[in-house]
Image 1 (cartoon, rainbow, N blue to C red):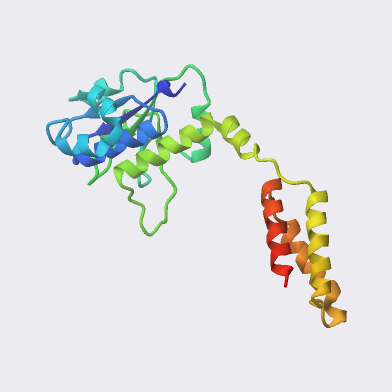
Image 2 (cartoon, one colour):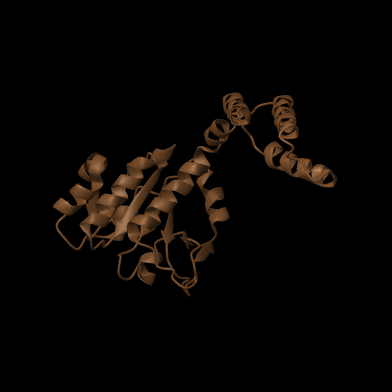
Length: 236
């Protein structure tokens, strides 16, 4: 499904930015890169050097002299802009972007402008939507490769939501009964060490201990290690 996404860099000025873009694309499983009118002979040594393990993407990158030709493979194009433009084009949020990503039977192109100036209004006229990555209002301009990396990540996260969620829930958390046993063990040891003094503060101290330990989400191995540490420290 990732192959339906392509990235278009319009008039890039730095080879190292292209290399970094290629590397980020490969990090998230993308490979389709088009370049329009680069300001140097492509590929140069800086693009190759910064691509590191993504030289295969640099190798098969297509170079065009016109935006229209670079966009031909796509039936929907989203342009990235650091600022809102006063043109008759729909500006979308990241939530809108997620909905578009999940649409079927679409080849989606993501278009990025040159480092110094970004996409011109004419460049933007070829797109369906304009997307602005949320940033601090005090400094909105993002590096080209950073902007592309964020978009790659957002697409990857959306397309792999089930797998990511499954992995995050695969860790088996210890049962509350095992945590209760640990807490009881700790309280008994603290009682023997006359920790709960004065007596009138014992209740609030126990509540604080409960709050501290019960909010943890340890697995069985971590719980055994913690119990062992507590037991060891209690010995003379």
